Image 1 (tube, rainbow, N blue to C red):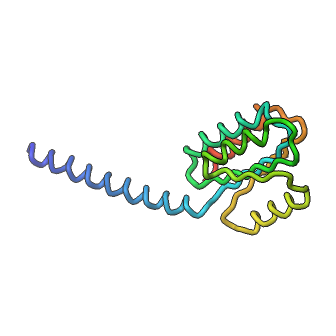
Image 2 (image 1 turned 90 degrees about the vertical axis):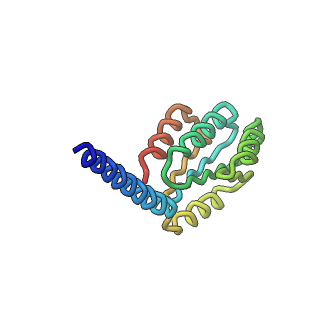
Image 3 (image 1 turned 135 degrees about the vertical axis):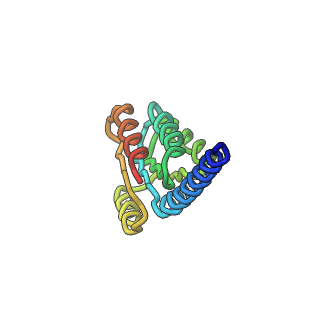
Length: 146
């Protein structure tokens, strides 16, 4: 009787291991096909840009797909460029562009949309935006997507 019980637990454990392995493989291959592109348009945003980038980097570790962050500085006169360059040097998911015109920004967003594997969120933070609202939106987007 004890032998049957042990065999039952062994078979149950083996089946659960197989199910978890197969579902993990399925999730990882499905996640590789979707890239989330977050486009942040900033100007003179030294007060909030570091917090937003830290939030995105930490939330990206919980995301199932890849995250690509594109930060566009449209002509800051403060330390925004320096802050973003520091992040871009340490995080490969962050791309940084300086002094980009509005038409070039629109073209970049259009080209990302043409790539069907990209889910795009773009935030124009050049106008006054409360950083908590931007962070809340980004956290929801990064944690609820496929």
